Amino acid sequence: MADSLRDQLLKSGIVKQFKDEKRQQPPAPKKPQASPAKGKPPHPPKPARKKEDEINLAKAYAIRAQTEAEERKRAEQEAAEQARLKRERKAKLQKLLEGQGLNKPDADQVRHFEYGGKIRRVYVDANQLADLNAGKLGVVQNAGRYLLVTQAVAEQVREIDSHLVALLVDPAIAGVDEDGVPDDLMW
Image (cartoon, rainbow, N blue to C red; front, side, top):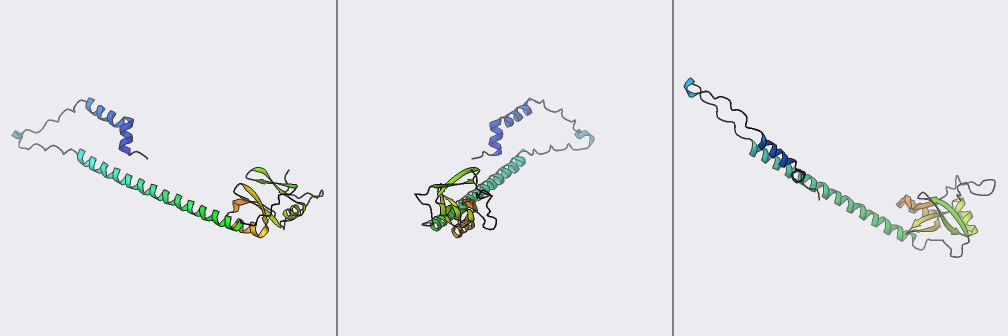
């Protein structure tokens, strides 16, 4: 928790140093006052503003503490709201992806793709590879795994959280090189 300005000044020693400097200064020479014999009354000394300054400083500290408390409360509320929204998205995705995975345990071909700045892979069979490269299937990242799903499911996941769609080839631009290798295939 942040210390108040006063506490910070006291810890740093600036306030103490300032008070010490004031004590070390010799008192200012007094101005000669008019004597009562000349007919002018002496001016009363000006009141010290020290208490007034302390009151204003106390008010400033109170206002600062109140605004800091309000900012902390607002930041906590925003963080709680973000966490709530994240939980809702996660639950919605979990429900959507339940039973939608098309991954086969006996798949023998590897389809590489770039996701999160790294080359990733998913195992597919020959038909799934063709459909994946044609844009009929997509790959979605869920709980650290890559699920092979239909294009419709991948589009629904994109609507919820676009960052979780690891691979979805656009059928309009899906093309094949002369070698028969898809253009977006990365090795």
